Amino acid sequence: AQSVTQLDSHVSVSEGTPVLLRCNYSSSYSPSLFWYVQHPNKGLQLLLKYTSAATLVKGINGFEAEFKKSETSFHLTKPSAHMSDAAEYFCVVISEDSNYQLIWGAGTKLIIKP
Amino acid sequence: DVKVTQSSRYLVKRTGEKVFLECVQDMDHENMFWYRQDPGLGLRLIYFSYDVKMKEKGDIPEGYSVSREKKERFSLILESASTNQTSMYLCASRRQGVEDTQYFGPGTRLTVL
Figure 1 (cartoon, rainbow over the protein chains, first blue to last red):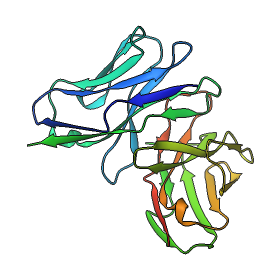
Figure 2 (tube, rainbow over the protein chains, first blue to last red):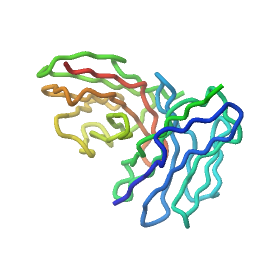
Figure 3 (tube, rainbow over the protein chains, first blue to last red):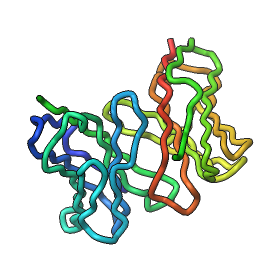
């Protein structure tokens, strides 16, 4: 069955240092993958998406993610963390069985230390 | 700007009560979704609707029902609320054929006592 695994439930970095949020997926073919962000007391927002075009995808707020089929990974990175990046991040894949459904990772809470 | 609104941000109900959660979107989207979000579990799909009066069960439909009488409105109903339905409920909408982007409401935090 398809699945998405976010390898860390919490990631803590200092402001100005790089961010890495890890995501692995399982899929029988090249999937469509996304990262969503949820700031405290705000709705979920699409950060970026991969839909079989360029493997390096740029999103909002300086984030990017690289699709690596050989590693079945779609890790989210940012060169320099900002305090406003503190939020929960979700890795998501479209279901192979139904394009209505999204399969969600459990989420990673990003904590930014001053 | 796409806007998805939910009727309440916070709701407290008692066990056995009937609960209605309302969601309205203003972008004429065909598809609408109800999720619940619990810590460590991500989002789980309860029901979705691909058009007016159409509905499909998601992964965890037990204890819930839905209604979509108008395109812009999708209601989630808890017929008899139970404590294990205490959760954050999120509504989303999406244009038919554009699989990649769902637009989310702010959520309703429901507590069942």
